[in-house]
Every structure is written in structure tokens, then in C-alpha cells.
Length: 581
Image 1 (cartoon, rainbow, N blue to C red):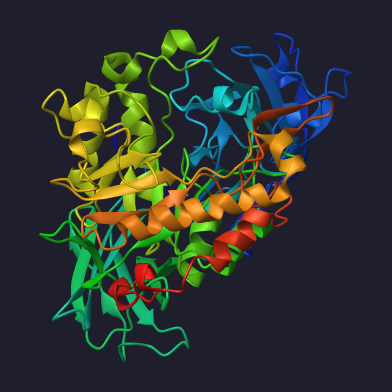
Image 2: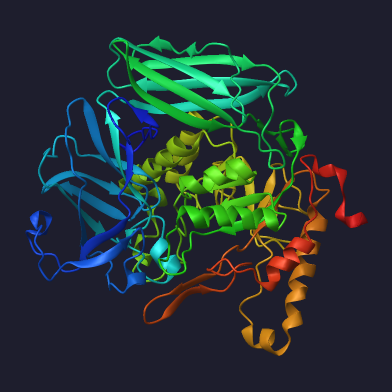
């Protein structure tokens, strides 16, 4: 971890002495836009408190929040019977963008960053048998490095992702890193596990692996080896069924932690065995076979709650991806929910996961423009590295994640260099992308493995890479992770002649066919997947209807065009050539 952030303990499926270790706190909360000085201890039914839905944006529900002005959420917690031998944790999966958490009027912690998951440990603040209150101060700060409110054309502040009440053992597993790779010419799996306990003591951690049908790989459980406060093991798994977008085979890893011969908790993780490589020809190989990525850029969008999401919509977005014959999603411009990655693992979608950094350059508008030079500012280094480490810590076990992106459309600076060095130090199994890479190369710097080309010309004549991309060839692999912008701006012409949209399909054909046989071109993602329109109580804002589906997930004409023009390639994409029909 970096930036003084903490590991996110995996949510247990079983904790000894607890009926249900994970409870949802979603639903009705209360909000106060003009909190008094005593707001953190105010549990009364005063007029200042109004009902709000969590998760969801405040503005989308009619609450007129302001930049850099704190507003308060509160909720009465479920009945707390006992705290002996247990940790009481509130897990926030996304609060935009600065939060301070209070339990029974006492400050628990604060957090910067609106799109990563983090915990507030309230154990020492709760009072069994009494009413217990949670208050959360939220500020939509204009200096946030994600520029997410600027991008959305309105303050998106609020508790935008689900909230959970988790009971952990007093000595919980802090993290589980499970690397599921391949060996022996990609025929066998390699499983490497690392975990840690806060207090080593007389502990034992055993694990089992089972296939999709529940068949156990070994006759008896294996044990992790202890090294101080850390446990680890590695083993070869013969004859593994590999994971790809076409054949997303998953295995279930089950860990059981005992302390003084008493079971403490059980943790389950889904794993897919696969390898990601960049070969000497700058091709991306999945399990030793060339893969071309063909997909779209996806934002979190809820039709009534804004930059929010839920499990149903996350699953639907993955289904829509597969139905359009796409095999790839870029998470623009922040990490998605863990639910979304779970469905990508299950149904087979390659993911370029991006940390929440956007427009660190002078494109920003007021009031964000004065914070555009954070790329070299040491005061922001912990924010860059902190939320990046939280993203990787939570999501590194997902087979679907095939590359990390350390930021969108920004000028090079030392904080981006530190991001790259951090990623390479903690995860050597995936390549790193970043845009704009030319601003680093112009300074003789390198903070990426894959060149990102935005809005390349349909025939490969130019892109934002300039001199570093000649006829779609470079000394590094290239990905066009924003291309074939969906027609949306010339609405008058669209009404006059609806068939004009078909020319977008022809452009898509050209972009793909010109690049298919270029070994170093990995593929690309259409901008964008979902309309960027926020239907608030009294107005509509956003960049516009630039998606292949609308915010309600209704397919548009461009979705049908995309499906017709996207062949179903297998993992070895050289088996078909669109130039030859």
C-alpha cells in the first residue's frame, strides 16, 4: 500500500459466532445541507435532516450541494449486541470525494478519493445495547485529481456506491493476493498466495481449490507457510482449464483461518488461471495466443442516481458488452465497482482498469482549473499513490483485469512516474498504460508499457501520439483506447437523415481493418458505451448522448451497427481477417 492507505480485508463468508458477517447499509439515510456545529452529535428529528437514497448522487435527488462545502449524512446502525472478539467495520465502496466518518460523535477517519473502497473501523466507538449513530461529512472538493465533477458538468458529491457493515474477527486477514498464472507451455496453472494477519500468534491458514463444478483439486487442504506475520505458498496445478474472454473458466479458492485451534473466518475468492504477455513483436498474448481487443469505454451511469451503480446494472452492462460481440472494456476514468469486475470474470471480458485521474492539464474548467498542475506537486503524491494502491489491492485477483491505467489525458509529471514505479513494484503480471504518453517521451521519460493513442484517424495517418506513431507502428505496443467516437453532436443532421449514422459503422470498419494485421496494435475501445446525460430534477447536463446504449440501457442504432460489424473472434485473432471478408 502507499500514501498511508490500508489494505482492504476480503469480505468473509463466515466468521465464527456471527450469523451474517456482511450486512447492507444501503437504502434510506438522512442528509443535512446546512449542518450546525453540533451536527456530528445530532440524532434528533430536527427539520434540517431530509431523506436521501444511498447509494446515489445528492444533486440527482434534488439536493443542491456546492463545491468545497461540507454536507452531512447520518444513519442509525443496526442493533449491536456484543463487540468482544470482533471488529466492527463500515465499508464505503465509493464516497465522492472527501469524507470524514464519525461514530457516536467521535471522528473515526477521513478519506480522499471518490472511486475506491475503504474501511472505517468503529469497534472502539460502538456501544452494545444502545443506539449507535453513524455520521459522514462529505465534501465535493474542487482539487480532486479525478476531475469527476468537472467531467460530469455538475457536483457529483455523495455516497455513490454501496455501504456495508462487516464483522471481522479481532485478528482478521488483512489481504489475500492470489496470483493464478500458467506454466509448462500454458498447460498447467501456477498458484501463488500471500496473506497477512495483524497478530501472528498461534494461527494456521489452510486453503482448498475447486473447479466450477465443486470438484476439489486436492484430496486434502494445503497449508500456507508462516514467515513472521505473513503467510504464503506456491504450487503447480496440473491440467488447468484456462481463463479467456471466450472460455472464462473460474476456480473457487477457499481459505480457513484458525487461531488457537479455533476457526476464525472463512474467505472465498474466484480465480481464473491465465497469463498476460507482451512479446517481441509488441503483441499482447493471453495464454500464449495473440489477442486483439475490441470494446468500448464505460462510465458508471444510473438514470436517476447519476454517477452511481448497482449490481443489476453492473451485470447488465457486461451482458450488453457480450451481446455486441465485444471482448473488452476500458473503465473510464476511475475503477469500477467490484461487482462489475465479478461479472467480467464470470462472463469473459478483458478489462483495462483506470485509476481516478483525469485532465491533469489546462483543459479543466472553473473552479477546477487552478488545480491542474498536480502532476509535479509533492503535496498530491499521496493522493496519486494512495488511491492507485487501493485500486490494485482490491482488484488484483480478478482474471478480467489485463492491464492497469495510471491516468487519462494528462501531461507528464513526477507523480505519474511514481505511479508507474509503484505498479511495477507490486504487480509484475500486467502491463501499464497511460495517456498522454507523448508528453513523457518528449522529455525522455517512460512511465508506461503500452502506448495509448486517442482518436486515431480511421486510416492510421495520425493520432495524438504524433511522431511516436508512424503508420500505426511504434517501438512499443499501441492501443487506441478511445476511437470511433459515436455520432452525437450533429443532431440536426441525424433528424434530417437518420441513415447518416451508418457512416459511423463504415468508419468503424476502416479503423479495425487498417489495424488488424499490424502486430503491435492491440486493438481499441469505442467512445463511448453509455450516454453521458444526467437527468436531474430541474435540468439535464453532461457531455451528451455519445453511447451505444442510453442511460436506461436501451440499445441504440449504433449498438446494432456495432454488433453487425464485429465478428466473433476466438482467442487467436489471426484466424480471421476482416480485409478478406
